[in-house]
Length: 218
Image (cartoon, rainbow, N blue to C red):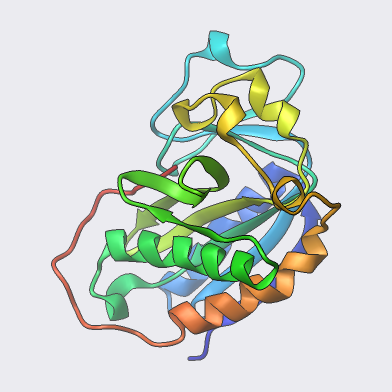
């Protein structure tokens, strides 16, 4: 089956989480193709399996604990979130390569709008000049089908990251497309580049490799 993309527009995180899990189940049953779910959330902090000290999290914003890898991060307006629901059976059950490729999707999309971002060895996510983090990545895998994915800062309020330590890092390391380009940017501007990069990177299955069963993140 060819790759698929669904654009959910703005969603509340709890609603998106329920729907994403339903999509993962449909992929596991072979009812749908590998699917990228695009959305933008109302303000929320999510905490992965890496956990977070509750006392370190800001007040006045919902906190949701989820099954993805990684620690705490912020989602909000101006951030493009992509949930990749992919059956890894045709991709060697290789979780590490999947995460690598998901980061590559974001880096290629950013290149098209003039932001020279890339993966950095030893660091999860996508970075500008190896020092400023523009996208976080956190995934979960159940029965070799992935879910969760990436959060790309387009024109998000970066001050929200300064209220805690996102992914265990100082909030000051976070950047956005708008900050890098020194102009306003919109989530709509990145949707088409992300979809094109998704097709480019994930359009062809690859050979089986040694399986890695541990979810990776941020």
